[in-house]
Every structure is written in C-alpha cells, then in structure tokens.
Length: 455
Ligand code: ATP
Image (tube, rainbow, N blue to C red; front, side, top):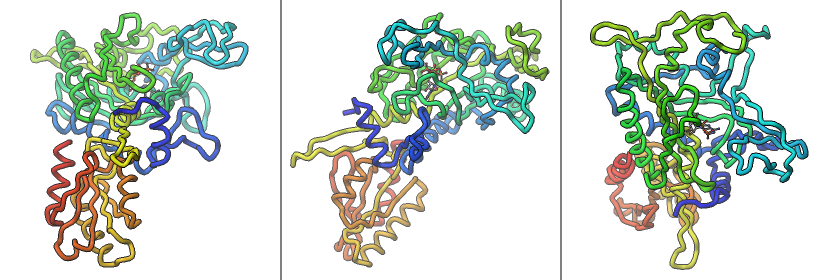
C-alpha cells in the first residue's frame, strides 16, 4: 500500500539516510534538502533510468550539460525576467506571504484567517547573481529557473557538431533554482532541485503529432519506474493557464499524499524560444529596459529537404527529479502486518532503482571464516557493476533484514556455517520474504536477472 501520509515518508527518509533538511545543524533552510547515502543512490538511479530511456535507447537524441548560471540577456530574451512570476500576497496582520493561485480562498490568510490581505503582485522566481568583482547591470546573471534555455542557446553548436536535423531531441539533466514564495510538502516544492528536460525539435505542422507521441512515451517511462498510469491524471491545461511560450501543455499530475499535483509538464513550446534567441532585443518589444546590449546574432534555424531555413517547433517533456523521487517513494512504501503481529515497513522499489542492490550478511560476526567468505561474496558481486553491494557484519540477521527492508534492498544474502561446507548461501527476497538456498557460483546471474530485467 503506498504511503498516504507525508509524515510516514519524512521520518523514514530522515532515519534511514535518504533526505535531510539542508543546514539542519543551524536550524535548517526552508525549501532546501540534502540527499544522504540512500537518497543520492535513489536519485542517481532515477536519473540514469531517464537518461537511458531518453538517450541510450533512441537514435534521435543527443545530450548536453549546460551551466547553471546564464547572463541576464538569456532570460530576458526567453521572456523569463518578465513573465516567470507567481502571484504573491501578504497578510497585513501576521505578515505571512502566500501564492494566491494555490489558495483555497485568495481573500483569507492561510495562516491566521485574517481578510486583511495586500493586493496580489507578480513575484519573479529567478534568483539574481552578480558575476565577477564589479557589480552592476553588465554583470547581472541568473541561476537558471529551467534547464531548457541552455539547450536552445546551444542549438546551433549541437546541430553543427552532429549534423542533426529535425526531428531530433536534446536531453539534459541538472540543477535549477526557483525562489518559490512558499516551499512546502517536503521535497515536492523546493527552491533548488534537479530537472530532467528534453527539447524535441520538429518541423512546424508535425508538432501536434509529436506532442501526443511524447505524452505516451513519458507515461510508459513513469510506469517503468513504478508510478502507474492509474495514479496519473493528464491535465490538458486550459489556455489561460499556459506559460508564455506554450501553445498546449499536458501536465501529468500524480496522486501525492497532499492530492493530485504536477510531476511533469509536456509542453508544445512552438518556435518561441529559438525565435526569441534569434531576435535582437529591439525587435522584442520588451517593456523593461534591456540590462545589457549583448545581441545573439544567431539564426537558430534548420534546413528542410529543399534547403530552405525554418525555425523548428519544440516539444518539451520536463520532469523534476525530486518530484519523481517522492512519487517513487510513495509507491514503494508498504506497511505489512506479519503473522506474529509485528508490522514491517518495506520500500518495494523496482530493483534497478534500489539504493543497495544486495546486502551480504555473515551469520556471526566473530567467526573470521564466515566473515571472510561473506567478504569474498560481496567482492564478486561488487565487480558486476550493478550498483552498491554492502557487507553487513552486525551479526544480527533479523535486524539487518528489517533495515534492508526499510531502504528497499532487493536481496539479502546470508552466509552461514553450512556455506563453508556446501558453498551455498541463503538468499532472501525483499518482497515475498521467501528464502532459497543458492550456490555462491549462481549468485551473480541471479542478481543480474533481478536488477537488469527490471531496468
Ligand atoms: P508548479 O505549477 O507546481 O509550480 P511548474 O508548472 O512551474 O510547477 P514547470 O515549469 O513545468 O513546473 O517545471 C517542470 C517540472 O519541474 C515540474 O513538472 C516539476 O516536476 C518540477 N518542478 C517545478 N518546480 C519545482 C519545485 N519548486 N520543486 C521541485 N520540483 C519542481
């Protein structure tokens, strides 16, 4: 049964080393989280699974890794300095700040119930930074609020160096930053997070077909990491809610413990971004004064079969790694009442996402020959390169099983006295708790089957 209360996950994640409040020893920083020994593995495995599906298993994709800071002009041309905003109100009585589009009643303070609220104003989510020692408009830059812009501004570099022509895509994963008015719901809404974004460039006129195609592809991927279709609502966003660049957007909304909320946006960004970066600022009709005179001078176009230049349309599936992690944790979280009345908590991750693939446990910690055999089993499995394999020498197998259930380790391998005689070990399956005896020589294939078949 998936987690229904966020608190179940928050305490498990803290206790078992998945997710910690950032700067916790100084009281913590709202909207910022650090990932512990288990969290970093889960996060990397989710990202790896995305990269595999989006890049390695396709013939029409390239990857890039752009900077997380860009000069102000990039976000000015993209429209973000003007429109990357959320409506902010403040309570005159308790001073709480709120995002009015997420309030049940935008006339009543969520904190104290007062109706003494300020008129909403647009609050820009970009974090400004000064680059270099000299402060001023010329050195103004921003932490990126979406990774997409570095894909657009590298469009020509990628097409020139790879000879790609639409339809093809550029994928990127990496950090981004949004100064959210309120960070809430654990890692659902944070101020620093990672994105898995892909821009798929297509000839105009074929964009709607590709948009539907990517919706289907993305749903398949969510299913492959254990987030089922029947838990995802497809919100074909109403026109008035579309971002400034979008012709149509499908928001995939997962049923989180706090309700249905966005896990991925799949937008038809038209030729907006490549077009904007090909324009000079005086053509853009900006209401704000340009803060730098830099011009792109680029023509971000592709050529059709007749050699004519055109600006490609773009389909963008954009998902957040933290929101993916939260959904995967929710789906994996299971509490089971055992025959003896105890409750066991287990994270039933798909094996390719599990932070630890197998734990090797010597039955007793003070028997050097058992520990040595367990160590050699661990070394052999480690060499397979499937992910983390650990040796747990606590000598308390029951306790180790409980711990590994809680971090979602698919296999526990116990080395006992008989193993020294017959070269066999006990292999316990996380989900069924069934135990089988296997020859040590068969372990590699067994583990490979479990981890790779699920990937
Ligand atoms: P929301 O409406 O929830 O603020 P958004 O529509 O602004 O989200 P997008 O701009 O479409 O989000 O961003 C792409 C993806 O990045 C989202 O689907 C989500 O998975 C992730 N994301 C966006 N904002 C955050 C955040 N503050 N914390 C964690 N992940 C986020």
